[in-house]
Length: 135
Ligand code: RTP
Ligand code: MG
Image (tube, rainbow, N blue to C red; front, top):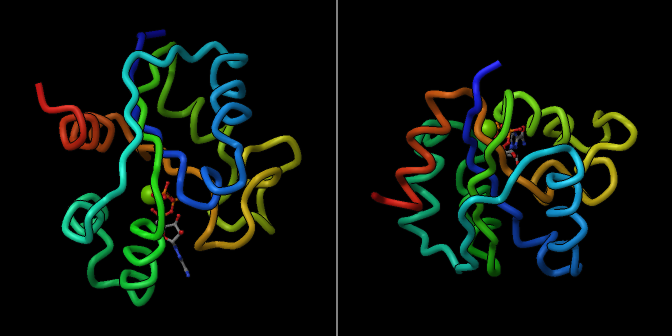
């Protein structure tokens, strides 16, 4: 199995409820290494650019408003099968559908305020890592 990197964001709802440490622990306990990290407040332009693939979707304005509502923690996670492993740790987009023991089941409050973002493919991961960590 190849060592991969993926981009993870702890979203404003999880930062606001003091869950940064608990969520980072989930990654570390699953064998993912935090190899880069920054806390920041996204501008509207940064959030729109990051989620550009969704710009025609009905939820896009709400998504951008939510992602700019408070600080986020952006990190690069590294490990075997990192993209898939992180998506498994996160759980389903809608926390009502997220499996027991997943981050979204335990920390998300709604489909909008769903605690974490994770790259959905190795191609997305490469683009998203370059977006926040150029060079
Ligand atoms: P993310 O990109 O944040 O990791 O989430 P995801 O892959 O699980 O879901 P995605 O389809 O990429 O959607 C991005 C974010 O948009 C919001 N969303 N709302 N109301 C809706 O039907 C709906 N669908 C998606 C969610 O907050 C989701 O995380
Ligand atoms: Mg997505």
